[in-house]
Length: 369
View 1: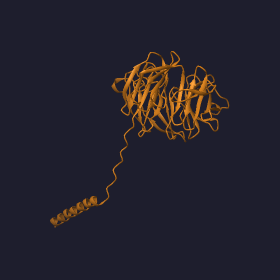
View 2: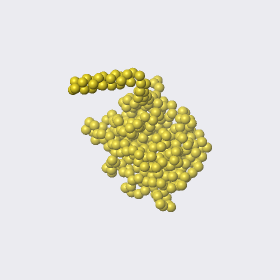
View 3: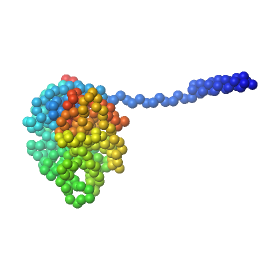
View 4: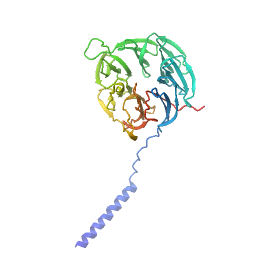
């Protein structure tokens, strides 16, 4: 009886095995998982004003292509749409230094000193003419100025979707101007207020960013000594919807390409030894709730890297973000690479221990000459 039962079980197993094998042959093949397309190549430029270095970086390899030492104090870094030259603000001589983007060879020194903003799609640029207290429109290829608006601007932001430029007044720090770049006219002036107040307190506005999807203006500001906040200003109701306490106002705000996410970095204030927690905050643009916290990076090699983040740039393929260092860093705040599919820091770019990229710009790989 036991042998009969054993033969029965063996036979059943053989039949079942044959069934599953035949099913695998006859059933349609399951589609293989689609592989992500390869990452596109771009070139990042970083200025380290503390150590006086201009560096070019290849992405997605995140390797140093070239680096040169400069002999002046530098701040702003700008890349015209064609990506063939890099412009650096020379704070020592109040000039603009122009370098070949491929070789970093010095090309010329320009008198057009100030901040630059470019819209490659609509083929125009905005130049903050600091010596003459003007907002000027320029040809993005020749940098030739044309129309102007007489305003002294401290910080600015160009929204290339709505074609509007926002800039805060040099002297009235909580006054923000709105310029229509299509008509090239000043269309609005807004005072940044604290919530639940009818008067504009003396908020010093630093970095700004506008979201065309929600009609919100975001900014980092300081309403009093030893305080800093991330503000969300509703342009339609002329009121601040929310504010979040941060460590320092020298970080940045960036809108995801689809407008649905807001990335905010907290720079801290290393001058006063105020070091932030090291998170990059990601907010839902509609609810203003935190939808993700990008965790701090590791400290490899024994170096003490400071998570004092600054400017955030998205690659055009929306696969990665690159985050520089906050202003006034004393060194040791590297450039970091964020994988946007995971919202995770995946790389640290630091050619030397005290590297501190206080400004960065991103463009196409330049044509070699």
